[in-house]
Image 1 (tube, rainbow, N blue to C red):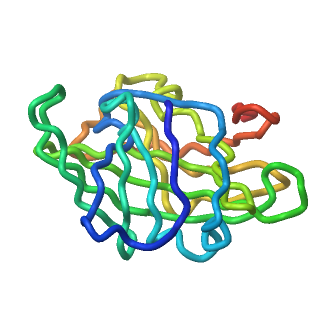
Image 2 (image 1 turned 180 degrees about the vertical axis):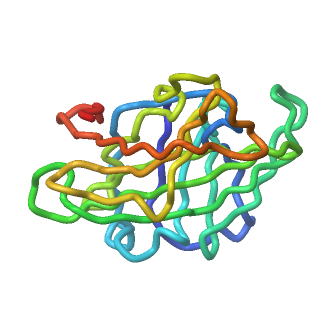
Image 3 (image 1 turned 180 degrees about the horizontal axis):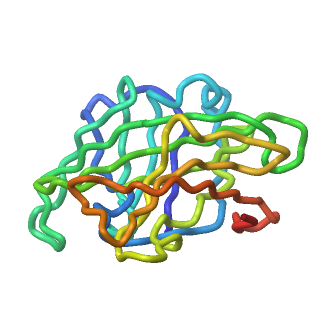
Length: 204
């Protein structure tokens, strides 16, 4: 999933920027870290609900689109003339967690974002990880990589995101074979991710 980001900063006068996040149970993407810190990176620790991100809706928009959140949410227009022909994207910050992930002794920030392409009745989620400097450290692999018994991706539990012993621990719910998208996933699972210096790898 190739996502980039922009640290929290002044709101652009032209309004919300276009965006796309993790695929309406649709596409999938994951990428290693990168991105240069800017002069605004000191704001990152306190302004994630009013930050700008570049997301792909888990591969729906492969090149990614920037989105500026206000109060933790954004409505971003899509390019309706190009596939997948959505009108707009509803983006929402669902959860934040803090802890030292990269081993430098400073607290990093984990941000769980939700994307709902419209018109549709689906949502997808995407997790961005930022170093203490505000630089994007990386992204957790797409939930699509965690599918097992069904074609539907598991969903994060926003209350179950944490950092434990240097790893990102995520409570999720997976779809059982008899579950439906309308009813939601029913199987609780816990996924643990470790930063190996280049990317996040699943350790349990």
